[in-house]
Image (cartoon, rainbow over all chains, first blue to last red; front, side, top):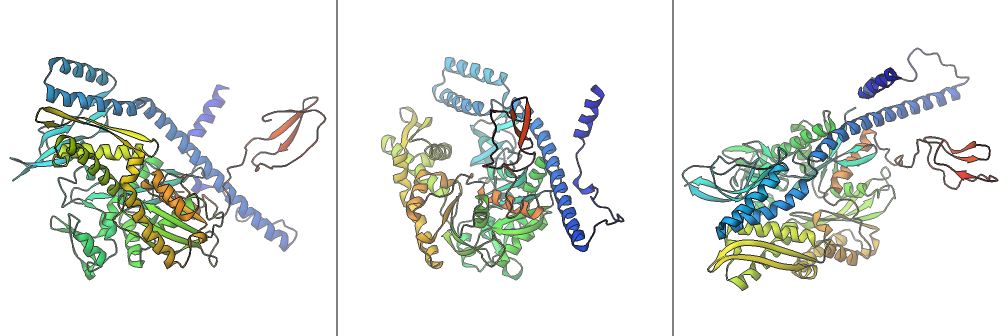
Length: 179
Length: 433
């Protein structure tokens, strides 16, 4: 029974190529129709069967691709189930960051740091961009200011983060332009 | 057999869909979004969201809204108008055709569009796990032959055989299956990110059934969601200035936060009556940090944007007049573009046409969905006029009668046959045999 299951699974894994389908009626097959009218009907039905067979095989191929995609997506969904919640929590983290700038309070800094550690344990990671060469994959330019060099991030207006290794939110930055 | 994809190559955003299992499915980009910004940096060869992020830094070399230039000469009045506000250089190329010049290199609009199509192709191939070589691409109904040829050329440069170019309003009609209902006259109201288009379509009785011809088209090339956002930003900034004597629009960081919040509030107010705009530590005042906390109601939003929505009705009236039709001649209205989610827009359109518009399909995706359906018809995945087999059961339905005798009512893979009768003395229905 195990063998049967294995071979069935192996067959299911193989993608069905709809290009290499054997025709229903092969060349050289003798026509056994009784009349021309019957022959014409036979040809029409054969063509119809070919069409349905192609559609059926295409549907099977679609389904196999769909199954494979769902498998991959399931892994992604599990990994990123908290993605939208994380995005919402980032707005609170942003407010704590801004409060820290304006208030310079040690206790507030401690609360912010504890909150960030909690999120980090769930897969959040800050993207380091400050004083580095600007990379559009990780940051969005909001403003430009004169500087000694071109294209260096001189201020981070809003931090960017990855979640489980993927970009969750790009940073918003000020970039230098040589005068 | 490889799939044919359907592409909505938009002015602001592009979208791609494909037929799968008899239904259209929108393909998400590698960035996880259902649309790709139609923005290209041809020197760095970056496209979409990544190109958008560096627009402010490289305004002269980041090309957007290139659709406004495709297939047009430099002397074209609309090109001359657009050149006044486009930050990148537009020059005359071969035969006076408009070309983009970036860092001394010239790119035709087809080459720029090709980079967007190449990204779409790559994302589609990743999703499907197979090579994609063919596509159906949509264009505005007002595109002339030169513009259509240029769009086809863009596809070819990107490595796609463009099997069909179809009109955007026609694609929207296909997405709602209006061709199957033989709906005679359709108005397509398309309010997107940067442009507004209105088209009147009529069923072409001379051609194959389900084909629509464009009777008339009109619009406003500078009316869209961005204008609505600006009105909200100005309102929030003006209210804040009244209270705190600080203009947030002068601070780039504050302005960006305002912009993000305005768009967020606009979207929220499509499903809620009220939205709170809460921006702590928005700027520094004389006595310390300042915060922006305001409630924006749907009624207030509607009063702010009412003029913009009314502005869209002028081209609609002109379009009807050009088609020599009245409002009562319109059988169906189709909504396209993200801004058509706004309840006030829906209400104004409903009041004007006197009927509920079709809006069940995601308005950001509806054109791509229609293109995918057309692609499916060409590929043979969808029978042109045939109904998709959505009502087929793979099971045999039957009834168990006394003595455990099963009597099939419907054999497998047949359509449900409604109204079939068979009499039994006593019966207990079962799911399947």
